[in-house]
Length: 258
Image (tube, rainbow, N blue to C red; front, top):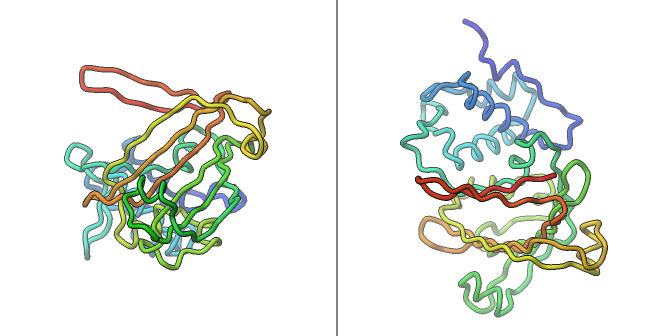
């Protein structure tokens, strides 16, 4: 029997792209190209670990992200299968790493701040939290091809993942970590505004004071309606374009990066 195509793939240990994200990209490419058909069984965790020389945790991160996007489905005792796109409800999973990697560019992140804080009144109101709730607050600079693109500050209630550390944020996809404790995105609300940046924000983005930017806010909810994420971001307007496509079937929205 011929060896599965995925098992002959190569991951780059020297790349800035995390290993789990490289594996996500390989499997996505195999699905989109038709090399992996709907209903086809993926290699097992142990086979992927052995063939690609990666840890089981790396494989689980990748499969978790693919399942959250509706591309694969896990069946207990049987394995992981390619989903039928006509019957699987896709979530609102967002991954900066996979978005940028799909454009053929190299993503990376720089963690600027990480803290556990008591949410102030404004954050409690936006996240529908009770007063005094502890939240994780971390700020990252999202880079593309080594250049800063997005300055992002995110808030998450501490109770959804009590043992999160600074090191985990630096080395893992937080969405993948949440997936393994049953937190998955079901709906999101986003807004964009045209603003200017200066001071510390301009310095972190590598632009001059007064430069134009998009101010982006997102609130993400679980299936039961709880808000578990509130993110505020500044996107460099000299490198990001917002594209809207209108068709009879509806409206789609996408970002492109120069």
